[in-house]
Length: 71
Image (cartoon, rainbow, N blue to C red; front, side, top):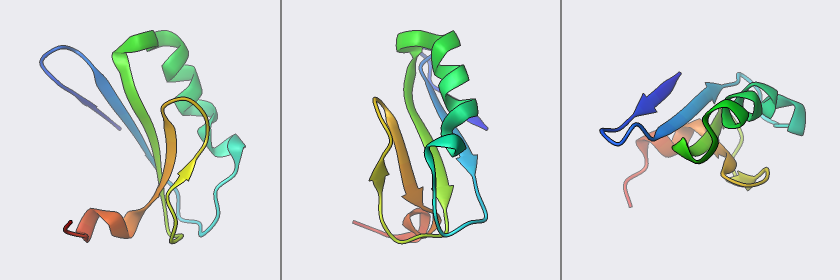
C-alpha cells in the first residue's frame, strides 16, 4: 500500500501479522525505494510489536497500535 501527496512523494506501508520484524521484511519496501529514489519519504512496516524500530534510511517498523494513539 502507498500514500502519495500532491508533490508525488510516497509513503509505502506494509503490514505484518507478527510481533517481531526482521530486515528481510523490508525487501519489498527497499525495492520500491530503489525505484522512487528521493520521492519515497518513508517505508513503514506495521507489526504487532510494541516498539518503533529503525531499519535504515527512511525505513521504520511501527506498532500497528500506533494508529490508534493520540499524541
